[in-house]
Amino acid sequence: MTKKITFKVQNGGLLRGEARVAGDKSMSHRSIMLGSLAEGVTHVTGFLEAEDALATLQAFRDMGVEIERTGDGCVTIHGVGKHGLKAPQAPLYLGNSGTSMRLLSGLLAGQAFNSVLTGDESLSKRPMKRVTEPLAQMGADIKTTEKGTAPLEITGRAGQLTGIDYVMPMASAQVKSCLLLAGMYAQGETKVTEPAPTRDHTERMLTGFGYPVSVNKNQASITANGRLTAMTIDVPSDISSAAFFLVGASIAPNSDVLLKHVGINPTRTGVIDILRLMGANIEILNEHTVGGEPVADLHVTSCQLKGIEIPEHLVPLAIDEFPVLFIAAACAEGETRLTGAEELRVKESDRIQVMADGLQILGVNAQPTSDGMIIQGGEIGGGTVESHGDHRIAMAFAIAGLRAIAPITILDCANVNTSFPEFKELATNLGLQLSSEED
Ligand code: S3P
Image (tube, rainbow, N blue to C red; front, side, top):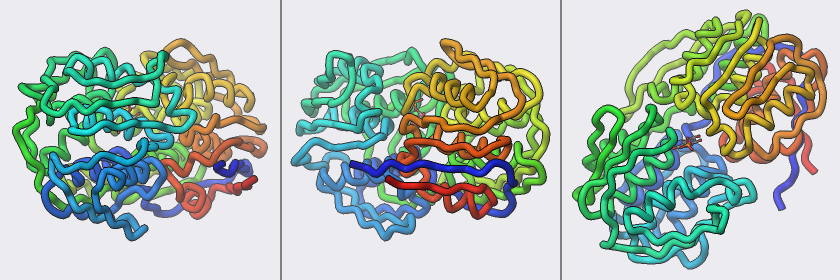
């Protein structure tokens, strides 16, 4: 049993200083997956040493890939080539990680061996039909529970998958990536069309590894004709982790924070756009490109935010940042409205309900709707809130402490380790008065 962790945050304070936050989670997963399928040795720096990315790493070790890890973000992957994975001896346990499960389901559907994918309580509740249905159209054989959830029992159908032309019903980078990975093992072309732009790290990294993938407006396509050649990958800091400090420094008077080497891929920067619309002072400095991904330092100073109607086209570009954006909205002057974000209901927790419940406990007028939330900015009170084991909810309420008028206790915070194990240390170095208790 994992230990229960409770966060206690003293109200008030401000954030000041410089930080390099944890490595990008999406890119870390993909570096292991594609590095394993490459020919040659791939060196990764800036790898996210957190439970989710490590679950992917372990899964590939379980499929015979030699992966060395020094513990400081440096990972060496001895690629086995596109057809070199071996049958795992036991179910692959993917913990809390939806990205691992959905991307692996596509990759494993076309292998010459069978596999079973399992996850923790939260992952076992998340919808998997969004990947198993299109994969079935390609000829895959994957069993889910009756509810369409994990465990996934995959019968490898090597040489028997066929490409499809799939229009995704929702904007999901995980579904897109899953189908592109399956398409690397399918006859003919696999085309995936997205209703709105989603993160494109899979497409960029495949290109970096020399695997042909073509992107035309909102459609990505791939075939089985290609191979991956090992490369070096420098994973930038995760803008989703940086987001906690972008909001924290915005809401806490007299704050001034410089976040170094943050990935600013345009499919991920919705949080900056939304905060700027709310009036935030965020400067993008030292912009450059690293391994095909744009990177910059982000300088943020405090200001009085104002409530806005969040433009729907920004929703998929900020999809993981809404828990902390709701905190920004609670500190803003006036009303903030979010619509078109029903995907938030099927994340690590139902992020609309869980955030609305917590905000209401803290005295904030937050009304959940089927696809978003309406928040009246005002005062944040103290109290005890539940994170429901969702890492981003836990960190968002910790940041709320900066503007609360009394201390906040946050229950069930162990899963912060899935994406940002150094959160507490970094946040306290910058000035957040955060302590944690284990039992
Ligand atoms: C991810 C895609 C997003 C995001 C998740 C990571 C990825 O999920 O929420 O944290 O790495 O592809 P969806 O594809 O479900 O939107």
